Image 1: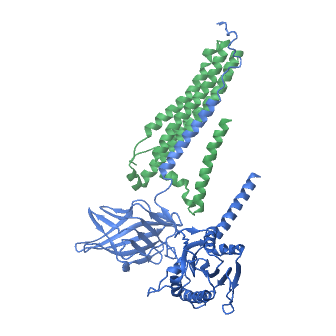
Image 2 (image 1 turned 90 degrees about the horizontal axis):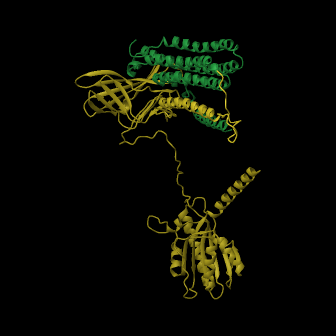
Image 3 (image 1 turned 180 degrees about the horizontal axis):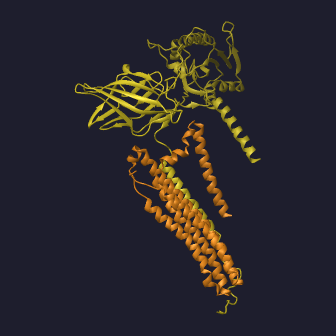
Length: 209
Length: 423
């Protein structure tokens, strides 16, 4: 299958390159140069923050999109034979959409916290440096957590919504019960949002203490 | 199976190359001359061509065929002979073969071929032409054959222990000329060949053998502008004289090598030296190498203390490096771009700076930690973000390829489905 071949090529090349590079450093006695700590310290907090912002909205939207795709297809398909389900089942689509909204809110909040800082001042004063680097990591973590949580939440809500639509088409009494499953599925998306907002409360970028 | 056969082929090829190479490598010069000119036929050879065994055999047989009856061929062989022996001259511009030169002056059809591969093997083919092969071991009991058609081979002995090569060759020269004159007096036509078995590329004189020692630490030439500070455990090098820029005044510092002193404490090692400038200022630089307590096993050049003694003022400043100079113990630090030490209004610049403290022997630098990294932090950030995006791309592609359209019941020729809407 093409997809497995592409995946193996990607992974294989990556692993081979990584092994050669790491073994070169180890065998020349410079093993300590392969340092994750050095990478985390030397990279700019701007990179971490902006990647976090990007991931929060991107992954959330992917989750929502997958959910809407799954449930939408079922509603459209079921609606052919049982047109009464069309209006009621839009609620599943709204639950999926909410997941995307969570990601968008997080991204807007994080973007508001992104501030410039002067590098030399940060190098001179360790507290400023610590603060800015902490902010960078926090924004990355918040964005990543919100994004991934919303991704899987969206997928879950979509699949449940799809089942609900088809069940409703068959027997209209089932819909309300299945909706409870969907509500639980949607709640987990909210968890991600709460954690993200809680993390970003510590963010403080800039040149002032 | 195919792999094993390929291995065998490669092994066979290697053997052939090795043997072929060893056999074909030796080219020796050959000097051929005759006692009488057989006819007016001259057979000359191209001067600088490399002769193979077959080429030389053809040439020699052509030479011998110009004679009416078979001549006497005498072959003088050395163990080692090369073109350089023929062209060697001592201080009085005498060559090693004075007697041979006079013989050749009176000989006919002299041919000197500078490089022939294995001429003795070519001469052995004369046996097939009816020549009798005779190896002469003892000169006293040598009997000169009355008729021709004999190849006399004289293998001249090796040098004595205390003999150098010119004397050794002169001795052989006397021998050759005496044997040749004896033969000429008794036989009609003599063709003489003087050659060697192997090339004597190196003259085995009593010369000290040259060992080339690879030195990582080159001793600076007296006129070089290299700065090298060498104490018992610290080594500092820069390829150019350091430059100090103090409030827009540039000064070039020249190290005074006798003033290099070392200091050591529990936390650091330092080296201090005096530098002169083109003005009357005297500058002292002290480099402090701390063994890092935060990360044990690393040393770092924390600061350079700069003392200036000029007639106007004396001053002491502490200069810190622009980028951290840190390396593990047993590694040196090297930067091929400028290494700058800065303080307020003053900067000290080194070009091609290399330093190492805590050395056991300061003969040479150990492997260097370079200031130019192969994977810099920006490169790593780029790789990180690009890999995220690439992963997303792969996932998206995989999903698109998974799309299956609902065409199970599609029948382009069949009846289109109509749904009666019941609301």
